[in-house]
Length: 512
Image (cartoon, rainbow, N blue to C red; front, top):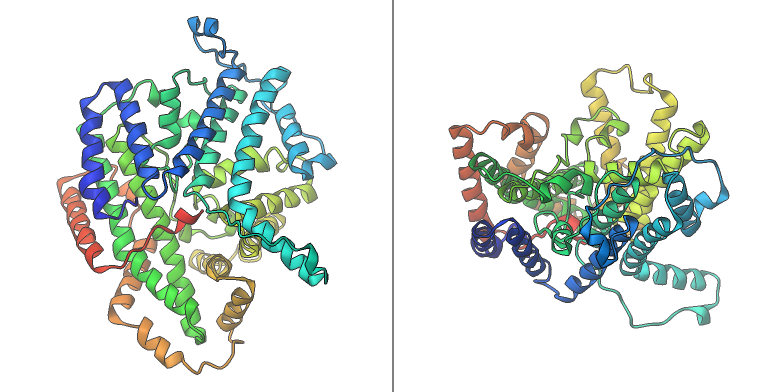
């Protein structure tokens, strides 16, 4: 089920809100969990079972860390583990291997944890990573192995199997979210949840289940105990949802049509290539920020306050700034739970650059099992390291602000090619075309007739205005006046009307 559908807007959402507001707080959590399971399992009910297993493991791990597994312990309040901060990690070969790294990561996080507590956290981390790795990377690993055996001339060693793993929707998001609970409890930054229904609700909440934002448990822990439901908060939530729907229907979908046409074309001119990748940059931003806006809006309707996930990333004047503005929940998660445990910037310059590269490559792999995503992450990691070597006086640091933004956006566009193209050879060919070194364009006139239609050009121009001129949804809805509310209602109705004319176009990040 997707937000941008009549099934969700006219049936699922009104029914879930009605039931939710008729129940007391504990009943609200149970109802929200059940509706979330229906939402998630609409396409494939078996996916719910996998999420439930992950939820159960992390729930038990959290209670184990605070000694609350025995029935006698339930007579006492759930303790908050003492937090003595993080140790300074030392260079070691095990930092480069997954399981040894996890062991050292757990050992260095605190100085006063028992072996029992450390084991509980390790079980949580390893089980989640195994599930994520199997369902997301089995096919990738199998194809890579067979390709390597073919290249080595030993086809007999290939693994011929009909088994192909279906990627459960949103598994990358809810596994990271579930792990954040175990990590926050272990660090002493949040109390363990005693009521299993509350924890199921935290993991499965349908507003942000499938495509984020990744909600850190410490950010919402208190809201499961007490939160307010006000008309003002609900109205702002509706406005968030309306503008998210508008981003999706009015901007992301037409820009996505242009991008699909150009990337799938057999030939394109240099101008077409730049137009196509810019349209894709607009599509992925409005598609993902639309989902985040709708998730934040739905959370507000339910009384929850989620953190901002985008901060006008295409206004950035460096790649470093870009990652302070793009997908904030993921970049923060990777920083706190991967980059810093690797040593961050505390082990010398060379190790800092290596840590940046590892973090971004793994961030690329988190998005998908493809060499394209590895290269996408490596380019961003390389740029982050390079900008760090230059300091404030980088190679474009003295240029005017608009020029720095333009250069940064151009770098981001080249990286989006690897994110969008079907494989590595297609990515290389597309980049060559952008630089004017592509093959002859025999069918470029036909392509131009498809992508330079007035509707697409108008949508493209409107997307640019919204990105670089208009205020963000977060700021625009902070004080919701009647004119703003009327405008939100208008764009919502227009977006819903367009859903009838547009072909089905799910959110891009569903596949991650």
